[in-house]
Length: 106
Ligand code: FES
View 1 (cartoon, rainbow, N blue to C red):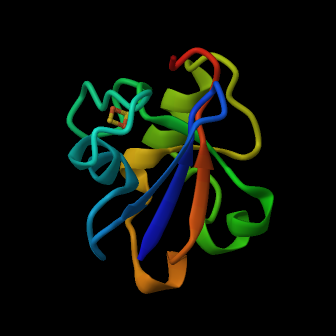
View 2: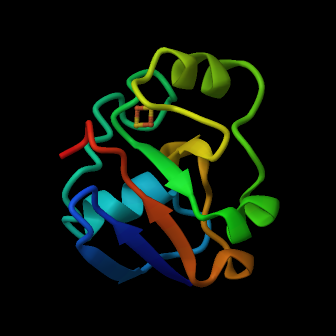
View 3: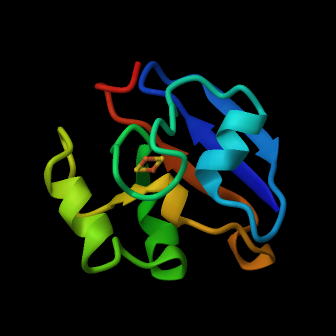
């Protein structure tokens, strides 16, 4: 599936993701700047924060209750469309997904 990242300075990175791999890992594999993934994908660092494009939120779902929501609440500029990209697992259903990064990840 195709995955589109938009950095806080509006640079667009369209990359090919693998099903079953998280959006955070996809960003790292493709050297997309702004996603650090410091904790390795266990929802404990907040450096993979993204905003899910409104039209996609129904498919990705919102942040999961528990560890993901807790981490986001500690993360700058998080809101209703915020997710940790390490918790978004790519699939064909998410082909074309657009994720935007917050200003703090620049
Ligand atoms: Fe650390 Fe997602 S990689 S919270």
